Length: 248
Ligand code: ADP
Ligand code: MG
Image (tube, rainbow, N blue to C red):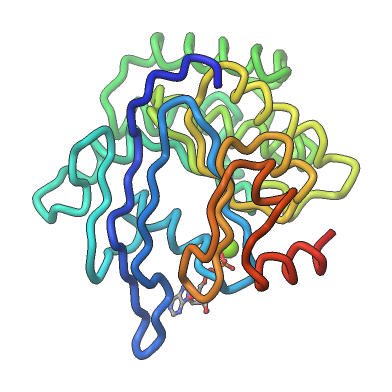
């Protein structure tokens, strides 16, 4: 792993989440080391999105704790905006604001929520756009861009606050097949840069390629966890084997 230094960026400790009678996360413990990529796989409804939403404090946990860089973020006294500044998130639907230019979409949160000066926010946004192959798109409105470009802008927006961690939830699921590659290439290049990421995906080929650690979730539990080679090459659990046979 490039830049590996053994530090845990994100830790789930015995996390439990229920919706009414439904246990959605059941005693989930997981460490995400710095500069590593953790991929969450599992059937629809297995709890991948909920796990990511708990990490970004979009859901509260019912038991257990989550730590970011050693600090408990599930502590009710925590400053939610401050935590979210350190965690970039990209979801399936691009969620760009249609009435704002690409540049304004990207600089909105740094300026409004985190008090960064316009010039500084724009300089950073333009540098990121350049790096993700979107030079010249800054003044465009989202509806002028392809789905793949919009999703890359969403990634730039997630990077705009210089986060410690990036959470990506099925970010290619809504894209036409021919646009998936350009988005996955961006993710691969962020990995090369040493970005710490947790990725929920149905793209098994990509998962296999990019993951340092793979977690197979079933019914809200981490049923099996291992390196990409272990989990895809020699899955131990019957249910993991069944899942991989079904999706490949
Ligand atoms: P995945 O991302 O793996 O498809 P989710 O985390 O979205 O799984 O969902 C896990 C389970 O939690 C599903 O059974 C889903 O219906 C349920 N769930 C998710 N969000 C809510 C909610 N806000 N209210 C009630 N049930 C929910
Ligand atoms: Mg999901």
